[in-house]
Amino acid sequence: MVHQMPIQVTLVTEARIAFLQGERKGQENLKKDLVRRIKMLEFALKQERAKYHKLKFGTDLNNDELKPPALDNKNEDDHIDGEVANSNVSWRQGRQLLRQ
Image (cartoon, rainbow, N blue to C red):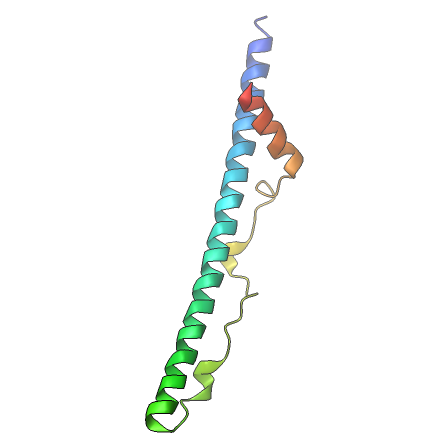
């Protein structure tokens, strides 16, 4: 039974790591979604300001500002390490081990 203890600790540690990696991935997805929504709202605000300016002054604003934001841009910070890109199977296994 002495030999089983380190194995059990290792499994629990691996389960915890898989769980935390899943949590991190979820937080990254939430962040990307929020950034996308913010860009869309900023674009809508620019359109409304241009519409108001045209109604008030009768002239259009600079068209360069009214281009829609690029939503598919990948930042250098958005890359995912090989360790974080674990499959859902290992994440689910980690969740199951933590529940036990």
